[in-house]
Image (cartoon, rainbow, N blue to C red):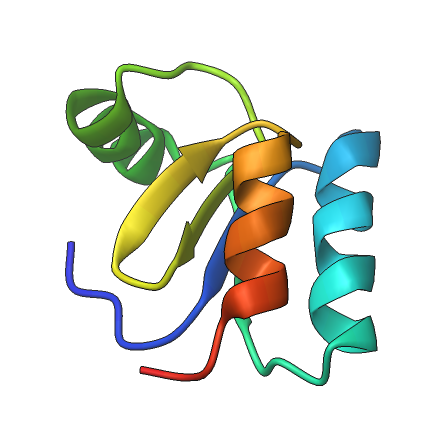
Length: 82
């Protein structure tokens, strides 16, 4: 999986995904959004990379973050571009 800028992996019903997107937008960070509802291939690939089967999964600063966590919030707040 080759990612070149911040990316939010989401589903239609994920409330925490919307929180991630809101913070990225508030900080003026451009990002890609990949919906996983019907994308089993990407879900499986993310599971191999992160070990997670839940969303949000956020790629930022060269790392993957699972969930809406203080570490993710810190990564977004300190992000200066890739």
